[in-house]
Amino acid sequence: MFSNQVGKRSNKVKNDVERGAVKKFAEAIGDLHPIYFDVEVGRNSRFKNNIAPPTFPRTFDYGVIDRLNLPTKGLIHGEQTFHYERPLVVGEEILCYSEVKKYFEKKGNFGEMGFLVLESFGEDLAGNTIFSSTSTIVISEAVRKVLTK
Image 1 (cartoon, rainbow, N blue to C red):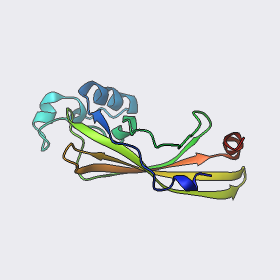
Image 2: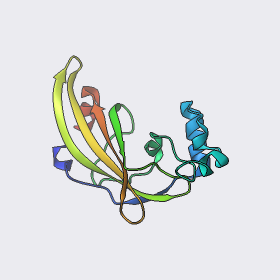
Image 3: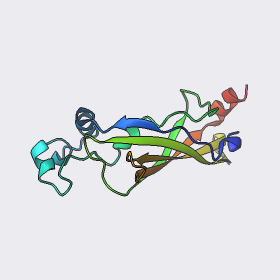
Image 4: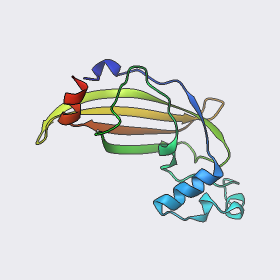
């Protein structure tokens, strides 16, 4: 169903690691470590600034992969992993994009399921990778039926 999308990627999109957004995200996930929002703690840390929680990149805009038309309802968020070269620092701008890594199907108890694997990246403005993440989107048989109509 999405095999023809493998290898396609989005254009890079600029994102800000904004102080208020980092604080709200940390509060929302219940991680109130002061490294995320206390200016003094950030200044005295080895990073010399506040940093974002490890899952904060979930909030970024990764652009649009041309002709990857996924529905807005019914998808299942499967596994997601993050790999960091260094933490995201509050106040920096980064460039983000995604690529379709693979697509496969499996028969299960609920019918034919599709598995779309996306790899996303965040780079500094010089093009150095800060993080990558891999996520799996599970496409149920019911959603597959809607997509093939």
